[in-house]
Structures are given as C-alpha cells and as structure tokens.
Image 1 (spheres, rainbow, N blue to C red):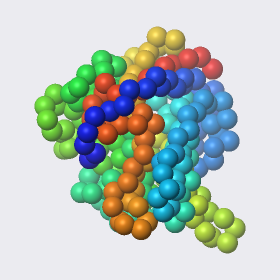
Image 2: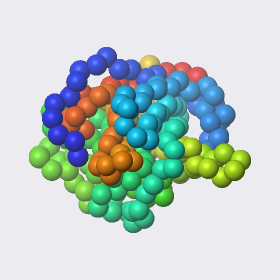
Image 3: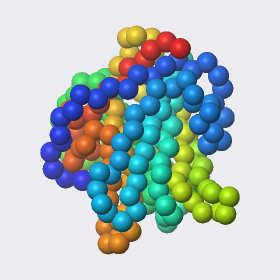
Image 4: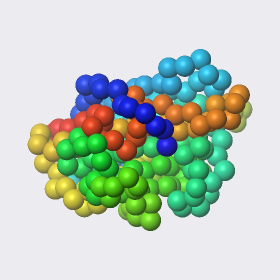
Length: 219
C-alpha cells in the first residue's frame, strides 16, 4: 500500500436514491440519474488512465459504478484475497461508515479491491497498525470489459452493491454521510511498478481523515 501523508481536499459526492433496477451488465445507461465524480492519474506515464465513479442507494445497498478508461488492462490474480491483487488493473474503494475521519482504520472502516478478473481482496479496520485481511465482505460486484468492434479492450466498468447492514447503517435521506475514497489500481506499462490514482489524492489509503464524503439524497 502507498505510504506518506494525505493531501486535504473538500470532496463530496451526492448519491441519489435509485428509481430503477440495476442489472450489473456494464450498461451505464442504468446509472443515468446518478451523480458522478471524475479523476485521472495526472501523469505522463505510459498507459494513461482516467475514471468516473457513479453512486446511488436504496434501503438495502449503496451502489457504486466505476467507468475506467485504460488501454489493454492486465491482471493475474484469480483467487479471493490473493496477495498482490492491487497490482492488477482494477478498482478500490474505502468506506469510513461513521465518518469520524480518524487516523486509524477502525472496525467500522472497510476496503474492497476488485481486479478486472472480478477477483476481490477486502479488509476491515482493527484500530491497530494492521487491517483484518481475513474479513470477507458481502458486497456484490461485477466487472465488464469495454471493447471496440475489432475486439480491442479500452477499459472496464465495475458495478458494486455494498449492503448497509455490513456498514452498520440504517440509511436516511439527507442525513446519512459516510467517508469514502475511490481508487484505480494497476502497474505502469513501461516499468511494471505499482501505479495508482485516487479521488482524494491520498498517499496513505487507510487513513480516513483524508477521505471525501458521500451524502445520501432523494431521487
């Protein structure tokens, strides 16, 4: 994981209550009512990437969709909680359920990584220096590659549903606020080194004091 200190930003995404079924088919038309945020790797590295993230909710789940532009994404890890999954092309999000913005990753804080092979690595905070990597969350997720007519892969869409029960939250419109960060993982095409970029511009992912906020709104 990255090391260093986080950069403070004022970041807010408004999640609207969904009004239609989402089928996790990689069809962003289903997310037309959702607000979104966009960010990119901000570098001249080989294989420049960019992302937009959409958010919706209902009484059962928080829904997140990542739309990532990335030429020829790659991944190796296929097993759950496989070591080094974050080196693969894929997404990551971290949630501070109580939005207490602490400098420790507490038991109410969770993190999910999903690579383009739809393998997941998830962990939960302990309040100590290490996360509980044995924890397995119940979030539903689905990866869909974006391809051109000639079969060239230009990116991917990852759709996720995180149960509110997993977060210990009873969602309330215009009341519920959680801390959150969105990230795109992978490696640099030229060097093979781990290279990520994220919405909040963090250098320490498991420090919720640097997260943005997700607020629930009506439809």
